[in-house]
Amino acid sequence: MADELDVIGIGNAIVDVLAKSNDGFLLAHDIPKGGMILIDEDQAKVIYEAMGAAVEASGGSAANSVACVASLGGKAGFVGKVADDGLGEIFRHDLRAIGVEFDSTPLKDGPSTARCLVNVTPDAQRSMTTFLGAAGFVSKDDIDEAQIKRAAITFFEGYLFEQPVAREAFIRACSVARENGKRSALTLSDAGCVERNFDAFHNFIGSHVDILLANDQEAAALFGSDDINVIAEKARALCPLTAVTMSEKGSVLIPREGDLVNVGVFAPAQLEDTTGAGDAYAAGLLYGLSRDFDLERAGALGALAASEVISHFGARPAQSLRTLAKQADLL
Image (cartoon, rainbow, N blue to C red; front, side, top):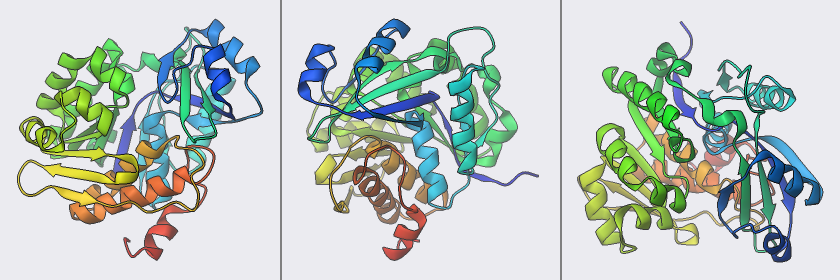
């Protein structure tokens, strides 16, 4: 039998293209600072050609998270859709090279592999324009029930939730997880994503999600308040465990019963690029929960992983997270 998995992520399979930029570039191309907008393939070509020297690597929110789980020494898998093209092969090779299971069948007829053009300004804000391409074609047929049964936590990406066919995949995976005594987790991904899918998110979370992850803006959009006490009251009614990250203010874990758990930050050596901070936090938290760590320790792992990722350019760890966690007496 194949090894058990700590976390399996289901999300957009995207090749990230990251470059240093400035506010003028964002204005010239109508890119909202610090946010994410969807673009078509023609727009992607125009922006890509205008960007500076770039780093290209497999990305996507849930894929970044499972890469961090692997860096922590965990066993991770990924479900996502790439096209049968060069970028798709790069994505597949990158994930497998770090030990992540990725066996999803590539899309034969349809758009090319997705890419996210990330322009990082001097204040470390990342502004993203994304061509989804093949990524949005994840369906329930891509869910391997045997693989879901092997995972302690199945983790869903809010960005992919916007695709109706993908919601069917999420629901199927959640059903398999619950029937086998496993947990399901969801990251809200973006405040705009919450606003566009407000009712659908509430219904899905209330029916299927055991662990909800959000930053403060996403939580405010979902719960209609930026008051953490109001958020906590509503979160407890909706989900067994909610994690709200607040950048340099740390994070708060909200269990359905019991006190709030405040988690501090690990100061990065330098603040270089916030791309992937939430993805890394999710990885540390979920890995800790998959190993039955208490909330304080699991949250600290998330904070540690986020700190490492924001200290350099790019959304994947540059150092072994497992080594850093051992040095911090978290593993």
